Amino acid sequence: MPATHFICPDGSLCPIKECLQKCKFNQRCMARPAIKAIASKAGDRGLHQFSVTELLRGTRESYLMKLYNYPVDPQSLMLSTTGTALHDFNEHAVDGETWLITEKRFHNDIASGQIDTYGYVLNDHELAICDYKLTTSYKIAKALGYGTTKVPTGEFYKTGAKKGQPKFKQMWTDKAVHKRMDWALQQNFYRILLEEQGYKVDAMYIQAYARDFSASSEAKSGIKHPQYVIRLNKISDRWIKLWFKVKKAKLEAAFFNNEVPPLCTPKETWNGLKCEKFCNVAHLCKKFQEKENRAKDIGTQVIERMQKNAGN
Image 1 (cartoon, one colour):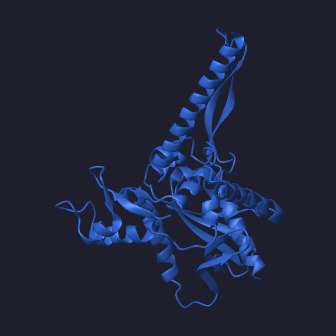
Image 2 (cartoon, helix red, strand yellow; image 1 turned 60 degrees about the vertical axis):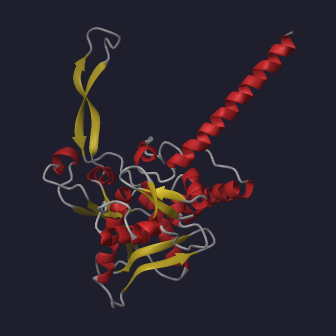
Image 3 (cartoon, rainbow, N blue to C red; image 1 turned 90 degrees about the vertical axis):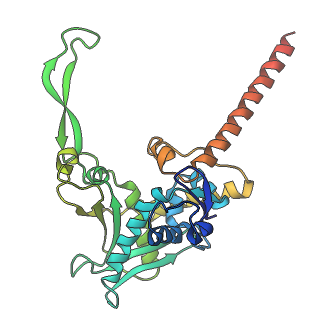
């Protein structure tokens, strides 16, 4: 289901259609063109099957977003709208070109996905998929393998609970684990969609833009430039299809049984940060969780009462 209401600055709700016609306050929270652009991205996209993006989300999040209407804060959608503008910027720059595919949706029996760019994008010998991501310096640093690692100092603790154990210090490294699995899952599925239609895919890339880039970015994360091109590794078709089939099956089972899926995993919620700030259905999730907790409490009380009566 689509977002149907905007959350106003005072916390009240306003139907999106009414907001676009006339703001109920003396002055809008943002310019009319901006709020209209955001509204156009908040509606139902009219897809007839699950998208890759939906399957990459937590199962509970996607379930609630498809089953219920929900309100959104226009401010929280600004970044996604900026990301869309970035895609449009790159797409319009190559209007009329015949050597590539841009913003075209493909599908198979598992899911559908929209290809940002495919063709001789970065050189003249590789037919490649290239996806544009507006993200953070931190995310890019993790994808490049930048971070800190513990190295021994050569000293040992002389007292306390750690007596005799070696001491370590944190040092910056560019050889940490490359954390880019979400990108790899998405682009490998897009690769499969293209190959199933007869296209050859030699490589997959992410062109990542650091939305928070500044002169201090390097000191904080090692990021020296506002954009990086990151090559992704190929993952076996069998593994990719199995991963998405499992996610699809979980969603389908939830709809068939009319049963809210379990809570999203810590990885899917960014250890809770997404729930706090970036999930549009967090309020619905919280209501269901409170209901589940009450049911558990009642069940526990019934069991305790039965055990007590059995003891008598």
